[in-house]
Image (cartoon, rainbow, N blue to C red; front, top):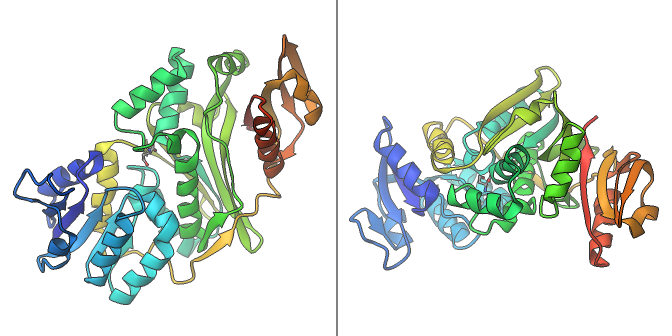
Length: 379
Ligand code: HSE
């Protein structure tokens, strides 16, 4: 089967190379920007791809919502299977694209959009048909995991580790998506859609790692704690809960052993119990491997089923104690179980707070020009 590739960046090059060595699959034309057609297999017109009868499938690895959405729609309309690594596209238009794929009798798969090389969505799609998924989530962003690990284990500075993650090809084109938690949020949105037929499009809470400092790391490390950026999702009445935030784990937690660009995706099945999948969550070949895995499984799996609908996330029943570092003047906003004042900096652990309330408090403090870092305390 000949596979056209849309985009020839970090992942596109990896997919091309893998397809050259994959039985039953071969690389077809590669769509690049006009003026970049420096090899015979590179083309700059999507029409050339959709009109090529030898191309049966399209791997979209260009990223961004447009023109990716237009091109994927064109490919599906032309009756070609589509596999994508583009979480922004699936989060924004996945339901419509899956409907079109169904209408045309082709597959629309996006394993690579969540977990890099980790076969999370693939397993979730199958498990959700045979089991009740009680909760899901975990470490789903390789860039921030790499950064937190390097800050904590090597004492490195935030700016330096971000540059390193970019140089290694882990970060998004705009790394704000990684450090702000948006990339991880999109992944938990997709996981909820696959597991629960509910794509949360609003109502979630998101905190990244932008406000963490070396002093924060030194402080919780002194208590034997490790920080990871964690996604959480699960059923919430007629809706789902979905949020992203830093979490502090005690030394014996499995999350502490997730280092570098690795991800640790997990789900709890009512019958299967806790399932944990670990592997590289970002980078050329891990992500390309997920694209090619989907290409090998075309026709066998549906990730977004007909019942899938957009919902408003409901995090109101989720609550945790939180580690908080903020300005001393904000002390009255929190009910601390323990706290310490060092100069004008207040550090402490709160009594359990509802997730939306904690995120709203942090937003308020920042809007008023104050400073805060917070992380949920793993029980
Ligand atoms: N920027 C993403 C990450 C790439 O770091 O996880 C893989 O989705």
